[in-house]
Image 1 (cartoon, rainbow, N blue to C red):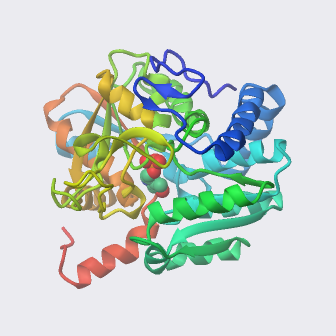
Image 2 (cartoon, protein in one colour):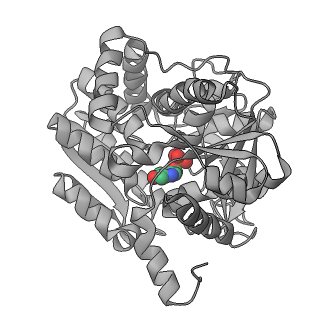
Length: 406
Ligand SMILES: *Cc1c(COP(=O)(O)O)cnc(C)c1O
């Protein structure tokens, strides 16, 4: 099987640019290390043995292929478009993160690296990385903001159970941005380490690597959808944090001009600085963490504090390929509020018996909002993860009367 997407209009060049975005804005010592990773990736990305090993792991460790599910009850209730889900929530560990962690782990193995370093925000990527490191018998160090460690106790424990060391990032806002800074420092210091990056962000070659491994989502979904319905979807929707599940979901549909691609960003509680994390909708072009893309900036032009109800979506920048798809008009991006996401979270749970991750609920909310006016059409939503991890947070909000059970 190939996870290669067809028909992408992305104007990548050797420096990893997507139109004006992307690149490799890093010091020389990191550039050397990144180019070793790029060489390894380019050597193995279409290698038969490498793909066979990856596909065995996808199948037997993660449980791929994930199914497509037709939401009959929800579609009937909305009375418009038919809504389908690509069930990435059914992967081992409950999200799409493992698709990428497994792929990068195999690159680390080919490079002979035995120390895995990763950053994590909500902890989902940290958990996926810890699991793959355990599977391959590697040392694993995960950097996580002190604030996130406090908020995501359960994921910290899961990582530790699988043998990872979790190190608190204690500078600045003490969240994902600081965790990335500290993880990069550790990576530079240890030449025997491999950096497993969790989303389609960062300097070249990471956006390309993550897209490659996540594109298995649409590689499966496009064929499954055709088999199931005899047609392609009219609209494909995915939530966008760093943009990895969305680029994986879009990749094999980019060449299908009649398929609308929509990314749902975390609109939080408003459009002011600090109220959201919607970098494509509200951000400006800037360089952060070694690549150029849209970034949430404050009035002074500094990286803004970001907020979302969903910890997995609050990163102040986004995949450079999404920035390019926005610029050329091939995909569109919308801001979905906390409230809309919570409503969608409850709606899917009650109508279909599937509790979605709060991240995925953002994509679902957009489908629910647009479906009534799309009678006769089909919408395919990437359900990036399951919501079990969010039940505590929802319970606390219910208890404090911040939200009501519908
Ligand atoms: C991490 C995460 C996301 C956001 O990351 P992307 O790179 O934008 O995909 C979305 N959904 C779930 C379930 C996640 O764990």
